[in-house]
Amino acid sequence: MRVLSRLFRRLFLEGLRDLHRADQLTFFGDLAELVDANAFTAWLAPFRKTDWVVYAKPPFGGPEAVLAYLSRYTHRVALSNARLISADADTVAFRWKDYRIKSGYRQRVMRLATPEFIRRFLIHVLPDGFHRIRHYGLLASSARKANITKIRALLCVQQPEQVAAPKPQTEIAPLTLREPCPCCGGPMRIIEIFRRGQKPMSRAPPREQAA
Image (tube, rainbow, N blue to C red; front, side):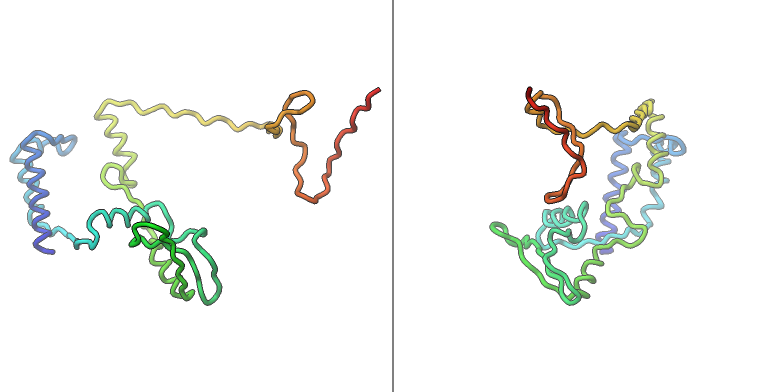
């Protein structure tokens, strides 16, 4: 990994140098002096002696398999309730998908001892202070607001106007049925909702008897 670390460091710094020579880097504020080639070279010098940490190993299924694996965890929990089949003090049974099967039915049932199930579930729980998806650079949570404000100022872009949220209505409109009244065609109002077999509290108005 030391060779890979030095290789990645060299390629990264050479890429920055090439971008600077092509005038594709822009500097603002305290870094404006880095426009000069000599100043930029002196600024990069300490990074050539810094140890870069690289941990990488080739995946068995290639980069596509890594992306497919990580995409299943970015917006999901370890196990949804729909996949649970049964659970008691001794055993937990749940469904899982065998991605090694390329076609056909891929659902399988796994049964684990309850302590082992809890151990595997807690592997997917992040420690305190960690986020499942973390933004870096300009959108980092610690300085996102200040960075966006500074970017808008440099680009001379006004901050978008905040649309005031509508005030909640004090009066609640009565519920109506979608089906119109079969007699007059007007919307029918809901006066009560009760379960099957439950005695309604409201009484229907008496029908008008024909003369």
